[in-house]
Length: 110
Image 1 (tube, helix red, strand yellow):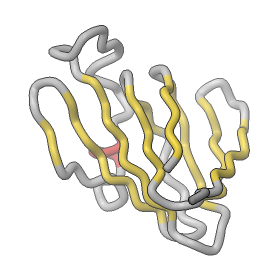
Image 2 (cartoon, one colour):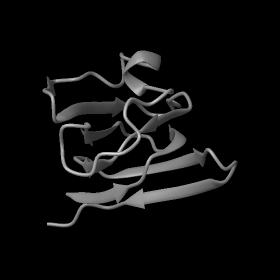
Image 3 (tube, helix red, strand yellow):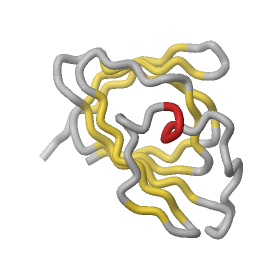
Image 4 (cartoon, helix red, strand yellow):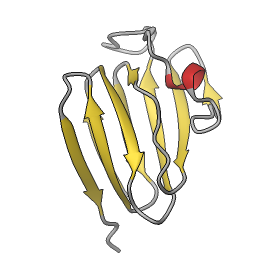
Protein backbone atom coordinates (compact mmCIF):
# COMPACT_ATOMS: atom_id res chain seq x y z
CA UNK A 1 0.00 0.00 0.00
CA UNK A 2 1.18 3.52 -0.66
CA UNK A 3 0.21 6.71 1.05
CA UNK A 4 0.71 10.46 0.87
CA UNK A 5 -0.02 13.31 3.22
CA UNK A 6 -1.56 16.23 1.37
CA UNK A 7 -2.47 19.75 2.34
CA UNK A 8 -5.89 21.29 1.87
CA UNK A 9 -6.33 22.04 -1.81
CA UNK A 10 -8.79 21.57 -4.63
CA UNK A 11 -8.30 18.75 -7.11
CA UNK A 12 -10.20 16.56 -9.55
CA UNK A 13 -8.99 13.08 -10.42
CA UNK A 14 -9.56 10.97 -13.49
CA UNK A 15 -8.83 7.25 -13.55
CA UNK A 16 -7.03 6.82 -16.88
CA UNK A 17 -6.32 3.11 -16.45
CA UNK A 18 -8.41 0.10 -17.42
CA UNK A 19 -8.86 -1.02 -13.79
CA UNK A 20 -10.87 0.49 -10.95
CA UNK A 21 -8.85 2.31 -8.31
CA UNK A 22 -9.67 2.14 -4.65
CA UNK A 23 -8.41 4.33 -1.82
CA UNK A 24 -9.12 5.08 1.81
CA UNK A 25 -8.98 8.77 2.68
CA UNK A 26 -8.79 9.83 6.32
CA UNK A 27 -9.60 13.50 6.90
CA UNK A 28 -8.71 15.14 10.21
CA UNK A 29 -11.46 17.25 11.76
CA UNK A 30 -11.14 20.24 14.10
CA UNK A 31 -11.24 17.99 17.19
CA UNK A 32 -8.06 16.27 15.98
CA UNK A 33 -4.67 17.89 16.54
CA UNK A 34 -3.75 20.61 14.01
CA UNK A 35 -6.66 20.05 11.59
CA UNK A 36 -6.98 22.93 9.13
CA UNK A 37 -9.49 23.85 6.46
CA UNK A 38 -12.57 22.13 7.89
CA UNK A 39 -15.27 22.22 6.69
CA UNK A 40 -14.37 22.43 3.03
CA UNK A 41 -16.47 24.22 0.41
CA UNK A 42 -16.10 21.53 -2.26
CA UNK A 43 -16.94 18.44 -0.17
CA UNK A 44 -16.39 15.25 -2.24
CA UNK A 45 -19.08 13.40 -0.27
CA UNK A 46 -21.70 16.05 -1.07
CA UNK A 47 -20.54 16.43 -4.69
CA UNK A 48 -20.17 12.72 -5.55
CA UNK A 49 -21.40 10.44 -2.77
CA UNK A 50 -21.59 7.48 -5.15
CA UNK A 51 -17.79 7.40 -5.49
CA UNK A 52 -16.94 8.74 -2.00
CA UNK A 53 -18.99 6.85 0.64
CA UNK A 54 -18.21 7.42 4.33
CA UNK A 55 -17.83 4.08 6.19
CA UNK A 56 -16.74 5.78 9.45
CA UNK A 57 -17.00 9.23 11.00
CA UNK A 58 -16.66 10.71 14.47
CA UNK A 59 -15.79 14.13 15.94
CA UNK A 60 -12.07 13.71 15.09
CA UNK A 61 -11.94 12.02 11.67
CA UNK A 62 -14.01 11.19 8.61
CA UNK A 63 -13.02 8.18 6.51
CA UNK A 64 -13.89 8.12 2.82
CA UNK A 65 -13.73 4.90 0.79
CA UNK A 66 -13.13 6.23 -2.69
CA UNK A 67 -13.73 3.94 -5.66
CA UNK A 68 -13.31 5.30 -9.20
CA UNK A 69 -14.18 2.89 -11.99
CA UNK A 70 -12.08 2.98 -15.17
CA UNK A 71 -12.22 6.33 -16.99
CA UNK A 72 -14.39 7.98 -14.31
CA UNK A 73 -13.56 11.57 -13.44
CA UNK A 74 -14.43 12.97 -10.04
CA UNK A 75 -15.67 16.55 -9.80
CA UNK A 76 -13.39 19.31 -8.54
CA UNK A 77 -13.27 18.86 -4.76
CA UNK A 78 -11.08 19.50 -1.74
CA UNK A 79 -10.07 17.86 1.53
CA UNK A 80 -8.93 19.34 4.80
CA UNK A 81 -5.85 17.80 6.43
CA UNK A 82 -5.84 14.21 5.20
CA UNK A 83 -3.97 11.00 4.44
CA UNK A 84 -4.59 8.76 1.43
CA UNK A 85 -3.92 5.02 1.45
CA UNK A 86 -4.25 3.44 -1.99
CA UNK A 87 -5.59 -0.10 -1.89
CA UNK A 88 -5.04 -0.76 -5.59
CA UNK A 89 -2.54 0.20 -8.23
CA UNK A 90 -3.57 3.35 -9.98
CA UNK A 91 -2.84 5.59 -12.92
CA UNK A 92 -4.65 8.91 -12.66
CA UNK A 93 -4.41 12.51 -13.62
CA UNK A 94 -5.17 15.26 -11.12
CA UNK A 95 -6.21 18.73 -12.14
CA UNK A 96 -5.24 20.90 -9.20
CA UNK A 97 -6.94 24.11 -8.10
CA UNK A 98 -4.00 26.06 -9.47
CA UNK A 99 -4.92 24.82 -12.99
CA UNK A 100 -1.99 22.44 -13.12
CA UNK A 101 -2.23 18.80 -14.12
CA UNK A 102 -0.28 16.00 -12.50
CA UNK A 103 -0.07 12.40 -13.64
CA UNK A 104 0.14 9.92 -10.76
CA UNK A 105 1.05 6.25 -10.99
CA UNK A 106 1.33 3.93 -7.99
CA UNK A 107 2.38 0.34 -8.45
CA UNK A 108 1.88 -2.00 -5.51
CA UNK A 109 4.88 -4.06 -4.53
CA UNK A 110 4.84 -7.16 -2.38
